[in-house]
Length: 342
Image 1 (tube, helix red, strand yellow):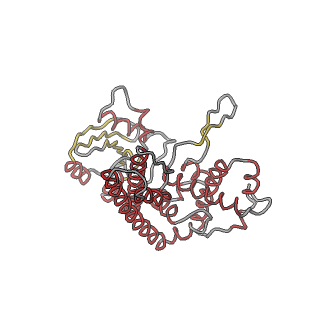
Image 2 (cartoon, one colour):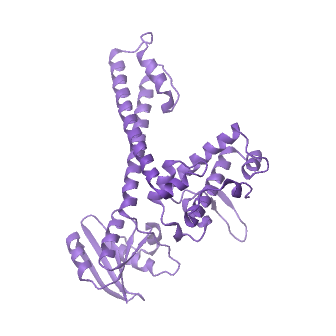
Image 3 (cartoon, helix red, strand yellow):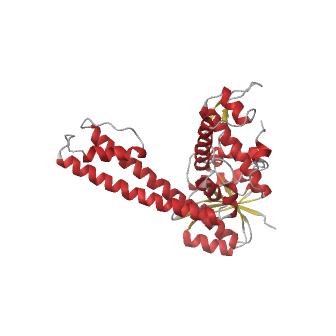
């Protein structure tokens, strides 16, 4: 039976441990290198190791579980209130152990190597998209200095090319050459984005859960794979509302004294899935403006009395609850069963 809880403050080269009994009596403090920590894991009898869900935490959690230890991951924002006075590695390790003993504490599910690999590919594509956006904005800024204005967005790249190749527009040769170089970089980034998008789409086709999720209107390969990569097992959530609240498309609360005060959408939760769900919901809302939904349906009633963006966020919340139901019940999307849900 595990009778020791060890708070672990991770770093690149130095790892600090704070060992206690399960009731809180301190047993030891250690400052170890990476190699010494591996040896400690091998010698230590089965114990409960508690780590912050930070860089390398999922790797170390898998290593610890391989040696028979129980591992719990805590979000850093839940540890911070338990740090006493000054912040240092030892105080952080102690705070981690104290936070883990709280009966109402919420823990993070360790990720598998497959989940982390998908997350790396997803983030790599996002990074290249940001780099391309930076290049497009730099090109627009250069042309703006010479009186040429082009709207934002990659969809206007042809207009940028037309300005650069138009000999009637007075641009110095040096500027025109630099603009051509920026266009070449943008084209290279676009090719990389398309290759990574194709790779993500192929991964989503080979996964049963990802294929099932794409039966939901507004959910495509990117959303399906983001849920596979970033979301924990759906069984960890009590219901679909808990999963939707974890994502964050819910209003912030400022309630007190029995009065309910709701603010704007919370920025908490998993930002990647939330952003993609809202984008997917907005595409569904825009399609509904071209082809009106069934009279009396939830979407029709919402569009009749609320702004489109608000409807998109509410629809993203509803999509999250549907996704939870589909994954936990192992069923495809059934539109008729959900059309009239309020």
